[in-house]
Length: 554
Image (tube, rainbow, N blue to C red; front, side, top):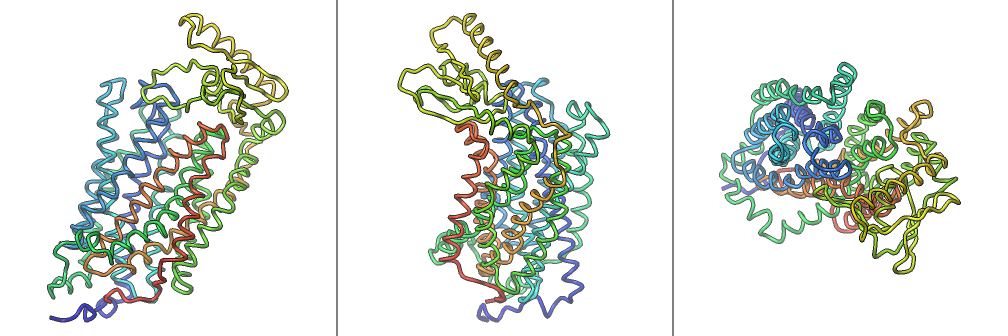
């Protein structure tokens, strides 16, 4: 039997034109799949109203984000299932299966009845479909990246696989365009029933994707390995049961994909949430701004993939993590400055402070939508959170009744735990009236004034965030593929990628939103992606090897 080093590379088998065809077919199919997956994230606010209307507004939106995150949570399990299948039976057949599951799950979201129609069955069905989408996506990326990489030359693998990386942003961009088109065409009807159209469109995209992928042949590297009887009989055991490979999997997760994941989701998803939910910029405007940033930034995926073929994968990705960690705070402050200057001015001229006994303060998170906040601290913070007002926390002595200080004006809250329901409602209404008048007088806006939104500058800042994404994401596929041997490559690379992106990255909006709600500072949520990016910078720099130019047959 030949040694592993005798397995030939794809280069002698396929011409440059054939490799370009492989890249195009794989990338186009993956664009459609990411389109499907991103629709939910882009429509989270509407989905909260349609499927979680039994909860209060704040809890409904958080639950919608958690349902979105559920799809990310199961992605590593999809990586295990489909990664194993890809290493046993082949790359092509596996990522053909994933596209079918993904497309059907997305199409069915478009025909689901709402909470108002069938009650709790609606969110249960929605979450079930989200789980199927996540499982499918868990197998998609590893298949596409491995398939393209095993057709590419050793000296331009970063460039070739960077087109797969473009597909994620391309899918988001396509979803935003479809959503915007439906919003502008349907007006108020979009939130009633028109939101279903982008999901139903995925049926057409599914048919196109399946047709394209049926035209592909199996990876030459995998075919020869299979013919020579060298494929793995137990990919999961080889990948994660042997310390030699498991160590690389762990380092790839913590030293590469975790930081890449949080930078990616901060630059694309959390930025969009920040515009619409925190700065209260109108939804269509926020989506157009994000689309503008994506349009400018997306070509840099290919540039940084190409650059990684010249100077290495590690320097490009580590630089992206470092720059993001150093500049997130000023960039998001800039988004506020150019997106809602009235909010910035009010926070500077009349800062809001909650002075309260910390023991009386809970997080503003109500899982069942039925909790009534009765402590003086919770009454005050609940009001501020619902009105989108940033605030600082100052500890008071135990037993102190909380105060809200708006500029120089102090407003006392009240202890409602011992009050009858009617008395509590009366005092809560009076407090809300007094505090509401005070924040209005202080200049805190209920929503961003379209006339004051500096769209060109916002697009510049959003494009900069997207460029950070391209730095960490453009070379990541080539780096992961090159870290692992052919016989267990699909399985080994898929798990750290999807834990890094699905867990570390996918939970950015939820964790950041919860941190902001707990602390009152609209920028506090950035500490999560910054912390993870710094961890990746340190571990990746110290412990992961450079792989530029290596042969996949080794």
